Amino acid sequence: MPVGPPGDVSIVVEIGYTLMCEQSPPSSLVADAGRAEQAGFGFSVISDHYFPWLDSQGHSPNAWPVLGAVAQATSTMELMTYVTAPIIRYHPAVVAQLAATTGLLSGGRFTLGVGAGENLNEHVVGRGWPPVNVRHEMLDEALYIIRELFGGQYVNFVGEHFRVDSGKLWDVGQPPPRIGVAVSGTQSVQLAAAHADVLIAVEPKAELCRTFDEFGGAGKDRIGQVPICWDPDRDTAVRRAHDQFRWFGGGWKVNAELPGPTGFAAASKFVRPQDVAENIPCGPDVDEHVAAIEKFVDAGFTHVAVVQIGGDTQQDFIAWAEAELLPRFRAS
Image (cartoon, rainbow, N blue to C red; front, side, top):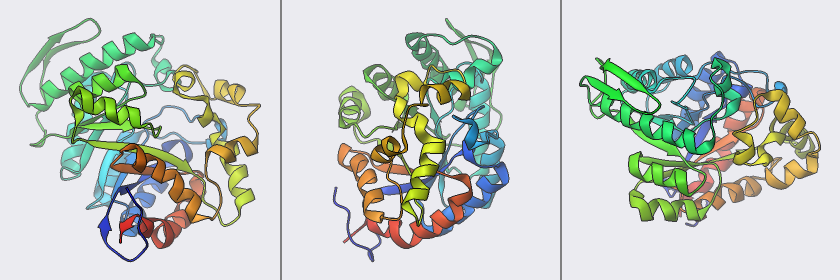
């Protein structure tokens, strides 16, 4: 899909803004969301973590009260968790209630994005960290429970991993929130095709979209996410990306297993600033940032959420994006 020049208003791909809880306090996240909507970002996604990836990121407020505040601070921008894991730290019945309430507070603008989670965030409740095939089994059951509760009737469920005893949501919109499922390989794509309204991914892999189509996901939205580090000075951007995002290159098979920021620091201690700069666009050149987004567009994604690295840079980044980045994704 081509990216056109500035000036036209026919969007060819929807560009979103990431509320990165790991790098900003809650009040800043709410203010940033309001400014992002004003700038023209079409949707916003929020991370749902208990820990930051690295200590240098410095934050990790709970996503759900932040979402409630963001729902009131915005009026048109679509909202989404990217992503919540309804398997250990949260019971799926609790996630269903959180999502239904957020959907009502936002006037139907909320999509529940879910995934099989990371050890980083789930180990805190002391239930251990199961292997990936078990996590997918748990997510399958969780999605069934959430869908049933979204129907507004009493739900009883006894599964291998979860039980629900006369659960019912008393406040849920009609239609209820859409559900997105994060994928990284064939097993998770099959799960998404069976349960999801939306496919979620953090890698621009065309095979994920093709497999999603093959298993029944044709015509549904596909939402990707790409980290960038905009700054007027490229060297500053590279240093900041290395300080806060060098963990990103480990890949999700590794990232899902490490138990805390100390583990991510150890796993990435030999990553050099130039290594980060080869994988994350850094600096003021809008063409570099556009190229990173276009990889997702070319792979078949309909929406791409941008992560600006650096919590204290968000307002300046949003102003730059409004002037230079977003106009590049309007058709000629």
